[in-house]
Image (cartoon, rainbow, N blue to C red; front, side, top):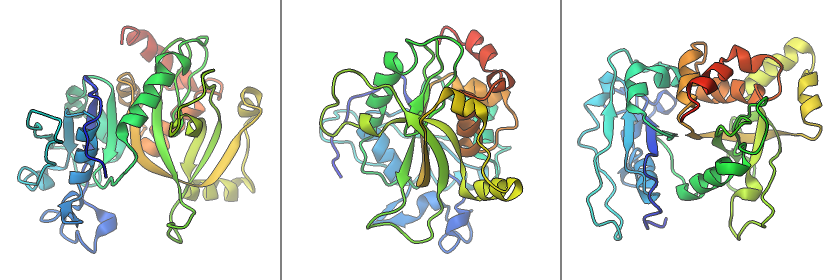
Length: 319
């Protein structure tokens, strides 16, 4: 992996969620002694990789969110070495460990916690502690800034709200949207039986200038619907098929339904999204609730109002 330092992004923060690692119980049978984030991967603890990923793109304002029982394990964990072209030592990540946080606290509830809300002061990334990614983080941020700085939503009218996909969206009227990453689960290096998500997307308006070689722009789409395949299975069994709402077809005549992609749990969120999460206490999962409901609010009549989006936009109009 290249270790050169990317362009710094002042004001951008990273939130790394460090849970106990229930899915890795072979290695984390007692997460109090050995949480998932500290499981050795290529002679480095897992949490080293998302930290390195952030530092390489120039983001040094990093918060590790962990339950109190796991907190004491992190202070002495290794940190990435500074890239050669960064003259100053890298700051230690801030460790947030609210007392009320448990090993089973849902991800959206973590972002709704007052201590976490107070720690986030600007646009932010949310990352898993087991991120091992060769995709340059600065490419994601640059793609997000290009689309959301003007072409993503600023030139449109005020009635619509969009949600993210590796694909992104912004609500109309200039408010910035978010961006998330989904990856293809089928291919030469795929693992049989990998869980997948069900996502519906549509094309995003592209700038007139062709994208440069290696650009992510051709791979960015607007997300309209997102859920897990397990939830999709329950919906189809209950309805004897998958119901398509008229509102979706009225607004988007051409859509793609993807069943072989998986949410990478990498999210770029504008600051105002924190208020949306705070006001909607029924949100539990970032992937299913925050992203899922936000995406549907772009075409489902009345949903934006139920999610308090108009109130949030009025309140945060100066952000």
